Structure formats: structure tokens, C-alpha cells
Image (cartoon, rainbow, N blue to C red; front, side, top):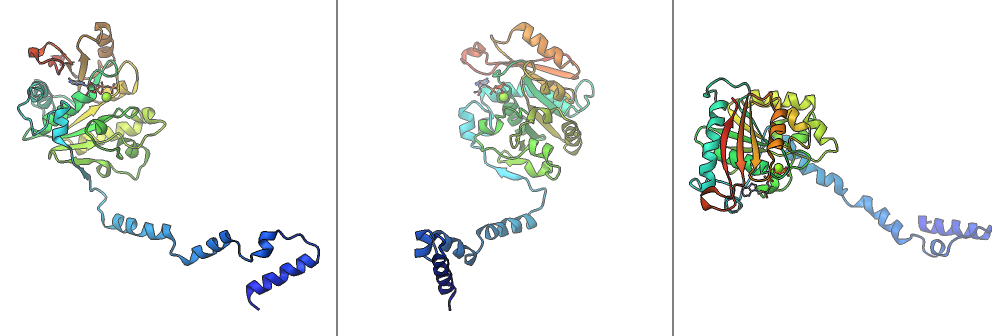
Length: 309
Ligand SMILES: Nc1ncnc2c1ncn2[C@@H]1O[C@H](COP(=O)(O)OP(=O)(O)OP(=O)(O)O)[C@@H](O)[C@H]1O
Ligand SMILES: [Mg+2]
């Protein structure tokens, strides 16, 4: 007697004993959904099949391989970002003026030696003054030098914008390294088609992102970066100084700070207050951004001048 016949016989016995059997069970020995479930084990388990190639890739891929991304240099140029395609543009010329003292200090060729001179933070008093725009342009401009390699770090972890401004999708980065001990910095760096420019994205969003930026783990990471990449200039895009405190903590570990001031918007008192929060940093440079009067060029980039030493 087959299993189905046995089941039918058992049902009949139950019915005769007065047990109520629902019509759909009694009438159809194997309901459709049960058939589907029963068939599942016969098919190859999809999850296991999907896992195999990924595991294989992981096994052969060296842990330190950085991913490579392609920047659309023409599109960047159109949005006002300097690139190797436009080495003689107005923006490129202006950033050339600003980067000189920064590079000299980073390479130990300034008036006096600067500790951690290769760590440069770009910040401002308030949101929207052009920190990210300046950080990207500065990184690009320095990367176009023959001698200097640059790492651009998106340290505005609560409101990251570097990848977006560069036309790139979100990627793992700083927060992943801070949260997960098994993720090494070299695994999340993004190499670009601008040969000397590497990106460190802000990484996977985290509810405690701002605390992580001001954490001991971040301090250790900064030390590691300053030493492991001592031949590199590392530029940090950061949150505004007057609205958050993590930027001030970050500032205490920087060799140089570029303070962006929006022309005709940031108030004198706000600039003074912002500067007072970064007093400890040995070198500060102010950049006046979004000037409208510069050589009749209309709304554009301003000029920089040194502040303090
Ligand atoms: N000199 C400039 N010329 C043209 N556009 C600019 C200039 N500076 C900034 N912008 C534009 O102004 C907007 C705000 O700039 P940006 O995002 O760099 O500011 P931010 O200080 O980083 O802001 P947030 O505090 O929100 O991070 C962006 O769209 C940017 O492209
Ligand atoms: Mg920004």
C-alpha cells in the first residue's frame, strides 16, 4: 500500500470515528503548497550555490587590494572641479596658489617643521560654505603634482558628500574600519583614474557615526595613517566647526587646517569663534570661497591667504 493510500485510509478511519476533517484535506491528499515545499529539497539549495563563488573570490583576493573607480573628469570639470584634463583653468590656477604652502609644510620644507604636516583638514564655521568643494579641488590639484600622492578622506561621516560630488555610488570606508576590527584601511581605499589620487569614503552609515569620529579608535587610525602613509598628503573633508564638536576633536590631530570662509556670508564673529576652536593646530590657512568679484568671472572660487604659522 502506497503512502497516499495509507493516508487516505487513515483519514477514512478518523472520519468514521467522528473526527471532522476539512474538505480540502480530505479531498486532496497533498495540498499545492505542501507539494511545493516537498519539492524544494530536490532543487539545489540556492543560498549555498550563491555562496560558493564569493567564497572562492575571497580566498584568492589579497586582503590589501584596493578597489579602482573611474572618475568622469569631463563631468567634474563642468561642475567646477579641477582635473588633469583642465590643468590651466582658472580654478586650477587658484588652487595652485593655495596648495603651495600646504605641500611645503607637509613635506617638511616650510619655515618650521610641522608635526603631522601631511594631515590636512578642510573645515568651516557653518554648513554649505564649500568645505567639500574645496577639499576635492585641493586633493585633485595636489594629485596633479609630479611628486605628491594624495588620500582624500570623507570625514563628514554624518553627512558625507565626497563620493556623491565625484559622481560615485556609496562605498565602504572610514566607519567600517572604525566599527569592524577585521576591516583594514587598505581594503576600503578606492584608487582612481587620477593616478595619484586615492579616496577613503565615509563608509556604511552608523547610528553612532559622530561618536566614532571622535573615538580612541579614530585617534589610533589617524596615527596609523600618518605613519603608514607618511609620504602621502591626506586631506580630510569635515563637518562645520560651530555646529558639531567632532570636527574640533579631529582638528587636534591635524598638522594643518584649511578654514573655508564664504564671502559675504560668514560673519566676522563666526569666523573668530570657529578659529578659537582650532587654536591648537600649528598651521591654519584661510580660504575665501564663492567670491563674486574675482576678475569679473562671476560666482566662483576665491583666493587664499595664510593665517598664523
Ligand atoms: N567656489 C565655488 N564655485 C562653485 N560652486 C561652489 C563653490 N564652492 C561651493 N560650491 C557649491 O556650493 C555647494 C555647497 O558646497 P559644499 O558642499 O562644498 O559645502 P560644505 O561646506 O561642504 O557643506 P556641508 O557643511 O553641508 O558639508 C555645492 O553644491 C558646491 O558644489
Ligand atoms: Mg561638505
